[in-house]
Length: 161
Image 1 (spheres, rainbow, N blue to C red):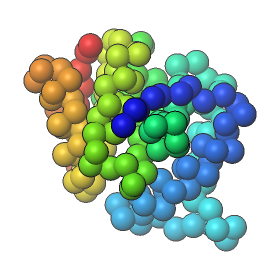
Image 2 (tube, rainbow, N blue to C red):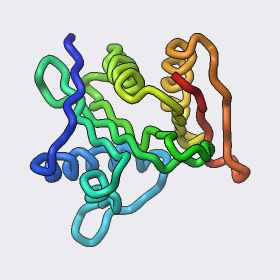
Image 3 (tube, rainbow, N blue to C red):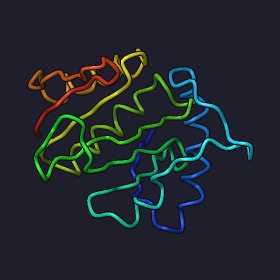
């Protein structure tokens, strides 16, 4: 399977909003969020990906078809360096999971944006924790640091590439 990252343009905003709804729905397993009276979860930072420097919205394509998205942003929980970046959101559609798609997309993201990285996930999201540990460990050849919040909510990895 060919995996490609496509930087989204403002014309892709509606597509990202729709994909974010799928992502948010699946994430309720960990977040316990409810939908609004309009039947949407919403995501308050969509517009920021086209307005704020250092944000990058990517579409993940699998053999040319939409397979998910990745949102890169400069707002880290643990890194304080000005040029650090983090994976704000990362979503691979169920159909493409456990096939190496997410790993290929993550590696391409890291390669495109060399420098200081932070990758976090909710501690109760065990599949995400296992996925990111595997990807970061292999990508950095074990040269990373584990981090976590005081309230034990977020956990993640900090590294430089």
